[in-house]
Length: 507
Image 1 (cartoon, helix red, strand yellow):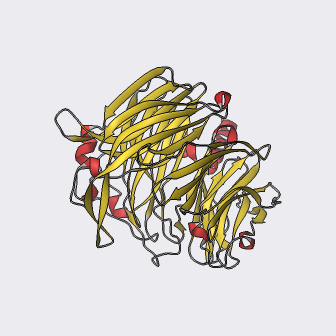
Image 2 (tube, one colour):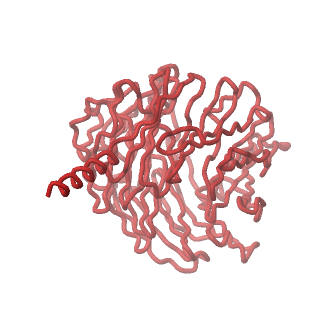
Image 3 (cartoon, helix red, strand yellow):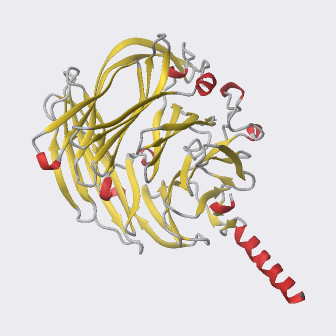
């Protein structure tokens, strides 16, 4: 009996010890070495991306879990391409891991030319040279050139180069890059875009390397007054005449098919495409006048076959009336309706046929509430609409960490979780009862809370305090993770830094 008691105590102690938060040792922190992102895709280590202002470069650290000791260090040596005055915190880039390699894709801007480069590093810290994927230069009559890039299916990279002419004509070329074979799969020139034909957006490529996008026709219907940073500005208000899905199939390289998705929208917050097998789904957040002429926010789920010959469903659902009430308030403009508030796509998480979309409202340095909804891509149903409270105000000079309003979402065990910085004065607030003007804003890291909002599979929204900033401040930064059972937080107190690792099944 005594032996059983001892064994039971020992097992309980070990379980308790394992479930406790794990802190790394304190490392020296340098003010000119700013963390930008964490990738936590592996059980034994994670990656930390930094902006080293002293060396004017971006570096990658591979750190062990749970000790956070550096296993490898990779300076990207971007100063060999960019001018010494370039601010890397504003660098347009992608940073991700694939097949035990990290990939850093970025845009170089030089006078009238823009170039996309890729640099690949392995787990030992060895990196490739700069691989030039595409470049675009201003021609006669061109007033602006731009690149858009994103990850596509099969781990490929989708690049969209555009040239804007003075008569509002845009020429675009799309390229699909295979990161495993390290070569361009195809390059497609799109039809000329103008106000009459519309402009393209929401580019995607599926597992068959086929191209899809949305053509939007719109016009300026009026102008609205907004107050940004105590300054009054007049902004155009667009009316969206039509949204058309376009299919550019690889098997028919010269044939482009189009299908009208929806028309006559008063406002468009976000639209994106989801390729699944031989189907393509549209998810959109927009506003439109209903039968009673009231402007109402809606969500659209629509699915077609890849050749656009079959429509499987087209579901339109209005925003929940309770959420519309909570989002009806004046906030820096002459309008108070939920439809007037501008939400932009932030992130998405998919698990088989379930899709979560996260949108956010940001105005300059003011990070405001997030909006989340869940979709079933098999039948098109839309449910679990939720507001995630957030109110963080940060401006230049307040802190060297410019991203304290960053949301850190991740998906684990059929649950969507989002970490945000929050004022301790909101600690007792119920997560489902968000009221914007009574919700206290946070302007500093010091003494702020790191709070986790969780949306379970049944749609329930729960809130939990994860960390209270005190001797060390947890700094919100861009966070990527895939099927990991732990959460990595970056902590800093000015002179020192360390890492906190939490077991997700204990949160």
